[in-house]
Length: 194
Ligand SMILES: [Zn+2]
Image 1 (cartoon, rainbow, N blue to C red):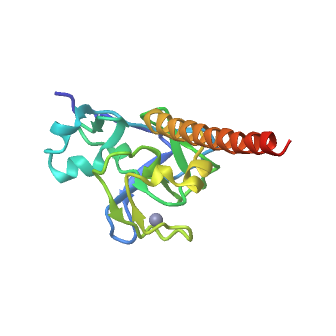
Image 2: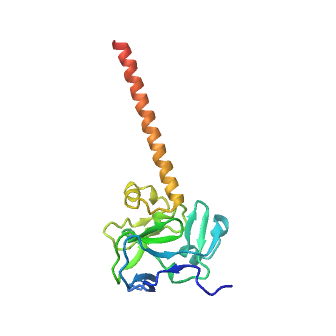
Image 3: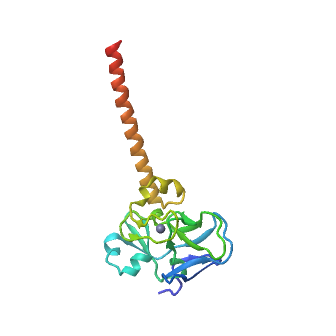
């Protein structure tokens, strides 16, 4: 067994208990620039059936990395205490890396939106992140919200991006089919009235 945490955390960031007593969080203690690497998650990858029977602590510290795969930190490190926020300053780059979505100042808590990674209902909760745009309820289907897709473009995990792409393709096809149907009616009308 290794003692080293399975995650990497930038030396410009440290984990500490949150001021509101609501668990731990990670906080910048240097300026972080937009696009800068903040953390890389690691651990053991489980399929849903096994993952779903793990203790709750394992399930809440995990990140979904594919449609049916869940990464659980072993051993847990400071980089694993990244919380959700509905107005985040960090996003995903690939499946396991966290990058700054904007410049981050010392003292700011670093958080991302779980909608960037979650399509499975393993960590749904009532949110009290305090953001003015807090959606109150965080669910595994939030990635479907148009404003979320727009705001986090480029920061979704690949499996979520594939779902978004498939959704948009289906919508385009439906629009096209509707247009053809409409044109078809019109051309019939044209024939009738010519
Ligand atoms: Zn919130």
